[in-house]
Length: 193
Image 1 (tube, rainbow, N blue to C red):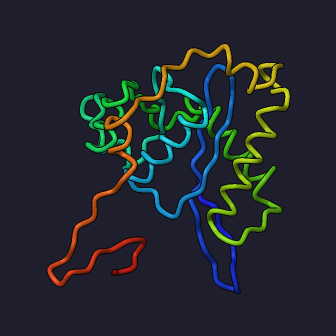
Image 2: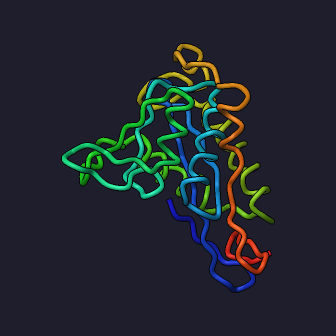
């Protein structure tokens, strides 16, 4: 989801990545400046680390950082996303077009987060915002869930997650390749260095 705020009279925008485990309803939220494939993968890595393991499958929205197009009902995945999912052994799934009920848990989670957390938040920088968001997730995951009637943190123990990959299969996706221009500059967050 998009999260807008003002700082010193200037409008700014951040992107909120949210993930939720299907069985336990355990939630995770983090904020980023971009929504490209490399950032999406780092968000997924952070979510899997927070959850303490890997699910069997990951259901995602139809964003360009995940899905390039559908060809005869067969997804053509973003190459970096497909490589990541294959490397960690998680089956990628994509929501059906124009059927919001297929991603209800996450959509409700974004709305819940916007109304329960974002409305009154104040932060100094992105790291401060993410620290606060992660603390909020901890509190939310300790409350009794309305649908499951149990605490997500406790239900998580019953959820069968695969262990996180080690070494190269995991670490190679934590970095991001950058191209250097002919005059020796590289671009990061829209700034040339």
